[in-house]
Length: 189
Image 1 (tube, rainbow, N blue to C red):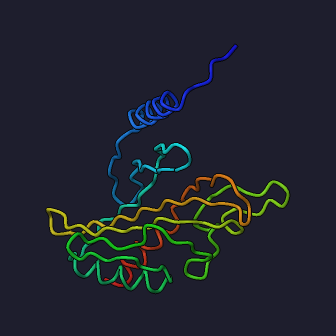
Image 2 (image 1 turned 45 degrees about the vertical axis):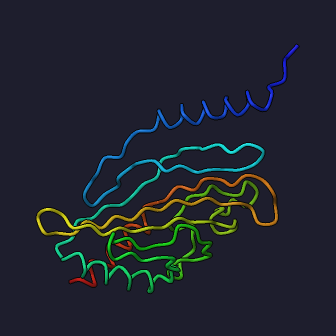
């Protein structure tokens, strides 16, 4: 006969799982003109709050322009792609939105940018039919050699509309991050 886990033991077990998951996460390595894989924590609440860790991808590009020029171009790119900006911090060079629900970005369906799985019956991408909550933040940093490093991080989850349950984690296809870097590069010439 099984002995039920008491709430304090359940919390301890979940906390241990969270620590184990954090311990197994690998640190990111930086790449130029490519992906920088790291980790970001997600907290989910219910009777017990636990922290889950998953990999995120960040696109990094080094540009031959001053930081201020790249930041100004980046602000224009966000406007053109119709990405709602929740905050801009010129001191840190950060711009973006940590939580928004787009239906399209720059007139394109979300499935162009995200893989959230697909519906078993229709095969339609979940990114186009589910409610997607997205984290999108770009950072502009000066390098020691006078160039500017532009990095964009995308994280998203999707949940079926009108249905309760847990959201699915989406994976970035790298298309949006690449497009942002290309548009910034076009503007700075």
